[in-house]
Image (tube, rainbow, N blue to C red; front, side, top):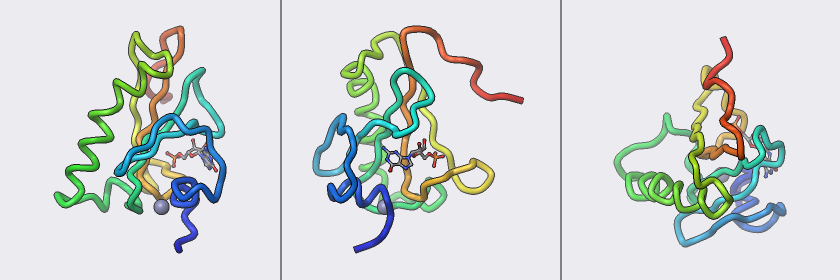
Amino acid sequence: MNQCIFCKIVRGEIPSRKVYEDEDIFAFDDINPLAPVHFMIIPKIHLPSLAEADPSHQAVLGKMLAMAGTLARSQGLGDGFRSIINTGRIGRQEVYHLHLHILGGPEPLGAMMGK
Ligand code: 5GP
Ligand code: ZN
């Protein structure tokens, strides 16, 4: 068993507020939300980051994106949302299990990036 915290969340060894789960992906609220709604969609397989992705991951990566709108609407984000994948040192990734952040709220979010 690996020690990755998101793999532990998938296995139920660390509690989370689950948004969605199927055989390929898992979605759960961010523990430190940066918007009124902030959850993450992750593959169940341990893929460290988008930098390690290759065509063998096409199906699960496609599913993460293909489910984003449905899951966002299920959390009240019917009028849009922001999707972010941080990758590696330059992308300031903190947890090395690929995750797609979904953020939104009743009001428009701030500008995409600070300077
Ligand atoms: P990153 O900077 O890698 O894109 O984002 C990692 C995210 O994971 C952060 O927003 C952080 O709040 C979240 N996070 C870190 N540890 C945990 C945890 O144990 N549970 C949950 N639900 N989120 C976590
Ligand atoms: Zn993992």
